[in-house]
Length: 318
Image (cartoon, rainbow, N blue to C red):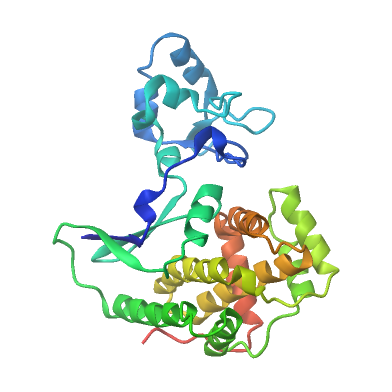
């Protein structure tokens, strides 16, 4: 079995108390069985606090009880994790140890990546100068051969990535070619598209404010030349993460349309809010990712809404 990741993946490190948007607030934090068993062995004041702050839901799942400010009860005022400071990083529950990593599974490999909802992961990936490239992090020689559907998906994705990272052409021209391949005749009305996103589940008032302004502002979904590099890397990250969902039903076009519409939305938001600076662009991407990529319900809504309005018929993978 192989472990595949984008080049540079293994250089990621959490910036802890220097993070301006901590993942220890605003999210439900599940406690897995192994961590729960370990926490029940902790003695002293910390053990008592763990017993008080781990709650069980009606479905039997355990999680940390968030504070009134929706912060993890173990997130200290200096923005460091009390559990890491007291017990070490190896004692974190699985969701905390994994974040912001995600995985896609194949018969002969696991693909791993870094979610863009993490500001440091977004900064690291979107500011890389080298073109997006996958590398093998580990290979134990085991695993079955890829299925024909998996092999076709990986070939198709690589071809799409080749278009996305072709720096002999302007980025917006590459996006237009991908739109043609996806059956998108023209860019959507971004005001109407912003109104659609406002109907989805939303967490951060800042995301709502951005969409509300775009819904009233006619803006072209094009990125300025100064953001070509991060825009290219964003496009590649989205293709890498979301196209594998096609293996669920054999339909790759809806996922490509999803990727492109999300990219176009971010481009339009960039123009609507004059976010042409790199920090502002990274902030927009982080907000998008946390609001859309980390809600399976939102992903499904966007995927099939985009496909239903694209005018095409879903085709199976070759």
